Length: 229
Image (cartoon, rainbow, N blue to C red; front, side, top):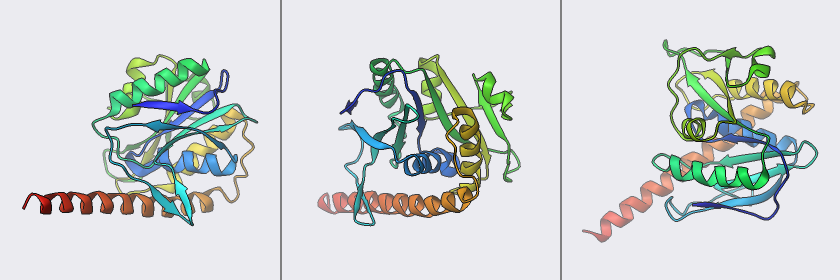
């Protein structure tokens, strides 16, 4: 597992959003890539995860890729793959990339569910006082899993934005709230009026891609089982 880069930005802010609760990280990073017209500068190379790609509107969707907005010196990690079981290897690959870039900080985006199961419109922050000043609540009690938790343990400059969400996937409203906070924090000048509508469009796109990816994996498993009799 490694990240292969065509370009190495210097001292960027890096944002990662992996599929998780509410798909908040995936929808948010997808929106940022589109809105900022970020360019593809690298990809994850791996043997551990399933060989899966998606095609959307005739374009190949990279399953795990690195994008860059030169205007904002912002690197965006985006994936549509289920990475369960490979969090530590992915984390080590990301940390190696961050060291090469001498990254200023890593911001991890995650969705978190409420105890009641109802939607929670709040945003929460970990390890970033400025995000708290901009309106996020500091995390008091929580259990985090996935790539974000591994990054929190192994990379001290990791800060997090957690969006309260419901158990049904995906949640474009929560993702829109995250984008609003990032807009203030990074001064991205996001046009907030069409934000939710666009987030909902990305929600539909990502949901469709993930459903196709899951179906492809299931079909492959059935095919392998048929070989075994």
